[in-house]
Amino acid sequence: MRILFAGSPPFAVPSLDALNLSNTVCGVLTNPDRPAGRRREARPTAVKVRAQELDLPLFQPAALDRDFVKTIAALSPDLLAVVSYGRIFKADFLDLFPLGGLNVHPSLLPRFRGPSPIPAAILAGDAETGVTVQRLALRMDSGDIIAVHRRSLTGAETAPELYEELFSAGAGLLAESVDRIADGTARFLPQKEEDASYSRMLRKTDGLIDWELGARELDRMLRAYKPWPGCYTTFRGQQLELLAGGVYPEAMETGAAEKGRVLGIDKNYGILINTGNGVLYVSELRLQARKALSWRHFLNGQGDFPGSRLGG
Image 1 (cartoon, rainbow, N blue to C red):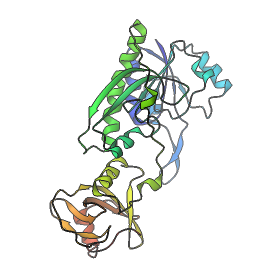
Image 2 (image 1 turned 90 degrees about the vertical axis):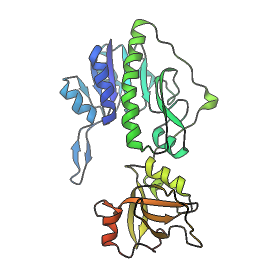
Image 3 (image 1 turned 45 degrees about the vertical axis):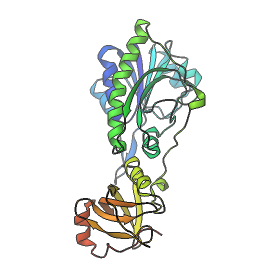
Image 4 (image 1 turned 180 degrees about the horizontal axis):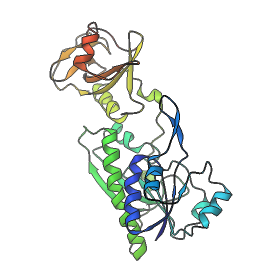
């Protein structure tokens, strides 16, 4: 089968590799190189790097305009496979593919359609999540479902862990789905619109900690917003990132302590901070413009941290 693959980030690479094993990837569509790092040098996407290693035809259009549609039509593709490309395809583009298109989405559709389903599942405290292969549709993440992989959640997972695991599983699902389409055994299940929910694009301000929230909610934020937008507060007028931590499991009398007050330390957990409900422990921190430190090393340079109040 002749496939046009569209994707950009590192977790899309396993799907490209899986499809390339037993199909003809007639082209790879990825985002243009973008400035990154302190020097703001243009860097290629991970999918571009892999496509060049595999010597596959590569396309990085700034826009999917009429001229580009003609370019892809000349490739005579059968199917479009999409893994986190980040753009909406219009009808004239989708019409190029006689067998339609497939998309790998890291949620149990129709739950958490949209751009940030993995952080959304962590923030919601879901008991399970997964990855879905769906038929591409003009309306975002609304296409019929061909395959699903489910994964139970323990409440300790971070977003990077789930991205790697779910997209790895999704690569196998995508390859299997293409095989089913090729041999005529594919079965598609319509999504139930009444069950649909949505995730939104994350913003930097999402990571600002409100100490009125409970320790459980803040623990979910630490795991969902890693590495971006991260979770942060202020200490003595400087931004302080909280990189790792969780709900302190021991009973602790906080009395009339203010929310955001640093209560002390626990040698087995780290720095203890009062919240709107329960105590949050923090095991790794980074003060503005400095490197990340374990809680012990952090306190070596911030002896007045215990007893201080964080945030506004």
